[in-house]
Structures are given as structure tokens and as C-alpha cells.
Length: 465
Image 1 (cartoon, rainbow, N blue to C red):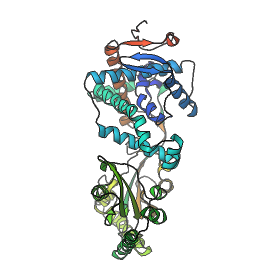
Image 2: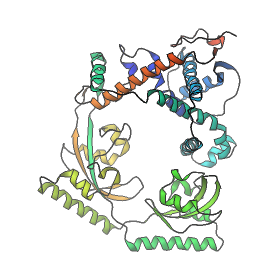
Image 3: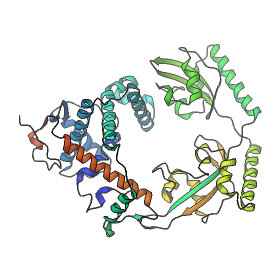
Image 4: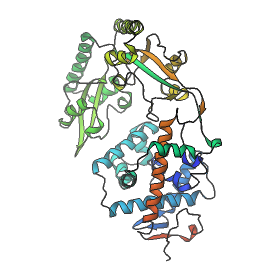
């Protein structure tokens, strides 16, 4: 459930307030669109321009995403882009900068996302008719501008704070017939037992990797071996190649081993949370490296899995027998899941960062967990259940349904954290409005006659040519 400010008609009837908070989301959703065609300048803000093609590309994106396009959509998009250019112009005036490392990380993140969407690096390269590095360079300026906007906005709203009184006032001003309806939500905790890999299994994996090392020394191609044997499905199809990354994008053990390699050199065996690797250096550019790897994942035996199940049976019995022990203590003492162990086993919703899950969301994240939760009453603990971790390993877990809320109309008692976030978002929007009003005349503004009749929400002082 989201409290979108524009839904509260007495408080948020100003279109700007809602749009400012989604400007960056809109940019991110466009991602690596086809390179723009420079055709016609329709607005100028300081030294920055808005092109006709900028608007049409966003309209196309909205159409593809089934978003409603109205007669005012293009006017709204023009003004959104004017806001963005104003933020960039002022960021430069205030000497706000983003580092090359930040830009590179964002470019790499976007490339990885779009490679996952299109299927492979080869498909992306084919789509553009350019190498990955060339694609990055095409969008470097755009990404730098996006990061500047984010930094400038954060600079503007960074001091915004919300008090309990602010939250109560926000809630009181929402019309009663506009209060959102909250679906049933669950708090869920787990105690995980990931069976340790036996020394025999580790040695079997290492011996296989040593065999690959020997085969490469004897002239076999590392990439072919990765394609045939690596357990990393994302890179195996690319002959083990990961693409250019810096060390912050790699797990520590992998990065430490890879950074010191020379071109075509193969590493010793590297152990990470994902398994055991061999790494081969392909190329480096400054702090970025492109490597291939072969990943082998040790398998847990049926015997080890049964031992994990038996241990959880014992833990569940201990919780039932000792009133002062409790599920949270069991998670802290016994769980092997680093993400939830220190939180008493409670799982965090990746969508909104809270410890509450709508059941539909829970099912999207982990369908087997949803089936387990639906069988439990609040406070009950499941029997040990077999599941697969995010990195593909088999483990057992106990699941406790901490509580489940009933569907209800939003209220301060049950939904304070969400109301607090909505209150903060409203105050940030108001601060951004104030900032725009203060700075709208600090830069040269010109808008093409074709947009002169637009119902802009800000009263820009538009220059006449």
C-alpha cells in the first residue's frame, strides 16, 4: 500500500508535488533508450536544452507501459524536464559534483539490468551495433546528469525531518472517504539451517577445478570449459565472461583474487559464498576489470540435509519447552541466515523496507513461504521445511508467523510508519516546490511557441526571442 500524495485531494491537489518525487523513477524506467535524434529545441534552461525527441521518447515509453497519455501529457513532460535542467544548472552553480566512480557504477548497473532483460550481452550489442564500452560512452553524459539531479534534490531535502505531531496533522487532514484500505499483512520470522559442506565434497570440487587448471595449461580454452561446466548460468552462456566491473561490484574474495591477475592468467581456486571459482583475466581499463570464471557449487548430501532437519526439530522442541527461550533467541543462537539472524529471524520486505508483507507480495517473493504462512496461526511455528536459498543452495528452516493484520482502513496505531513516510514525502515535495520558486528565475528560461499555451504549474519568467 502506498500513500500517494495526489490521492489526498485537500492536501495534494498540486500536480507538481506528486511529479517531483517520481522524476528520477521516470528517468530510470526509460533506461538505455535508443540514442536521441537531435531535431528541435523546445526549451532552454540556462545552458541546458530540452529536445522534441526527449518528449516523444517518453511518450513512447508511457504508451508501451500502458500509462495514460492525455492532451496535457507533453506539457507535463516538458515542465518535468525543465525542473530537471534547473536542478542540474543549480548543482553546477553550487559546485555539486558526482565522481567518475559513481557514474561508472550506475552505467554498469544499468547495463547489467538491460542485458538481463534482452537476454545476453551479444543481443544487446547486436541491438545497438556497438560494443558495450561504446554503449556506455553514449549514455555517460545522461547518467552523470541523472546523478547530479539526485544529488541536488538530496541537498535540498536532506534537512527535512518529521515529528509525531506532523504525522498526526497529515493524517487528520486526509478526508475520511479518501483513507486507503490496507490489505492483510504478515510479520514472518525464520530459523535457517544450511547444512555444512563435507570436507570430502569440498575436496571433490577442488580436484575438479585443479583438473580445469591443468587443461588450460595444456592449451584448452578457458571460455569453452566455462560454457560446458560453470554453474553460473548468467555467465556460462557467455563463456564465463562477466563484463567490465570494478571491485565494489564483486564479492570481496573474488575481487581480491581477480584484481592481481595479468591478462590471460588463471587464478588459484577461490572460495566465496557462492561456491568455488577459477578466474581468468581478460582485460582491464583503469580500475575496471573484465574476467571469466568457472563456478562449481558443492552439493550437500541427503544425510547432511536430514541432520539439519533433525537439529531444527530439536530447536523447535526447545522453544516449546523453555518459556524464556523464544523464537528470537533461537534465531540469534542457531540460524545460519546472516540477513535475518541478528533481527531475531524477522524477514524484511525488500519492496518497502518494513517487516510487513502483503500476502500477494510474499507469494511473489517466495511461494513456498506463502503456503507455509497460510497454514499458521499467529505465534505458531512450522515444522522444518526444505527450501532453496537465493544462491541456489538447499536448506531447512522453521517459520514463525509473528502476527497477521486484518484488512482495515489506515489508522495511526497500525500504520504509523507508512503514514510517517508519507508525511516526510509530502514535506520534501513542499520543500522542493519552495526551492523551485526561489530559483526559477536564476537561469535563462525560453520555451518554444508550440508549448506557449501549456498550463505549467510554475510561473516561469520565459524569455522572448
